[in-house]
Amino acid sequence: MSEASEKVLGIKRLPLFPLPLVLLPNEVLPLHIFEPRYCQMLQDIELRKNLFGLTLYESEGNILDKPPVGSVGCAAEVRETARLPDGRSNILAGGLIRYRLLDYVDPHEPYFSGEVEFFEDERETDAAVLPIATEVFDLFERIAKAAFKLSGNRGRLPEIPRTEPEQLSFLVAAAFNLENADKYKMLEMTSTTERLA
Image (cartoon, rainbow, N blue to C red; front, side):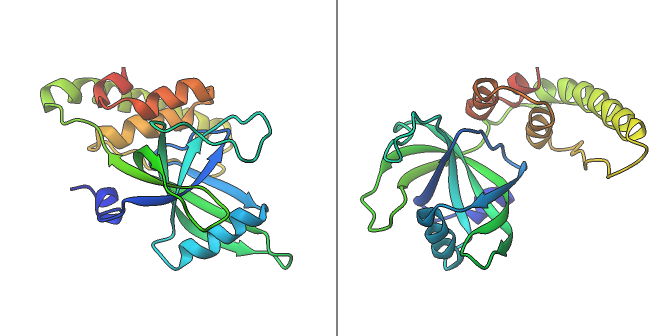
């Protein structure tokens, strides 16, 4: 069982935060929380495991719109919170594990909550995944080092998980400025080999 699976063990429901973006596992996302319902959600999840679900939803402007049942999202863990005097917050959320939205639950909260099913990639043999993972790792490492050098050695190089092909596949996907539709396809895939290809 992965560390991410352990963190969500026993969780069947998540508060949901629909946004016009896709969060991938291990990706870090800064968010400015200003709507009262999501300020309330942030307070509520502090009493639990500091987890919420982020699901892609490109709304037409109606705040009652919500992602369809069956949507795939990513559980996010609040890593840092900076509360502002007016009740808003700046948070740093980290993608944890993917989920499929099974149904909405009728909460008493002002935000959406859903029954979810967590999932990870299907197991693949080392013979199937390691050759492509090694190739992608080597190429991505060269690109990361070149970008670091071009930046005047500012910042830091990302930690690239050589021995974790699934994590590597999400890191590479997060590093490129993909359109939401392409990033969402990466989120839905259950084959590490397919995502790396």
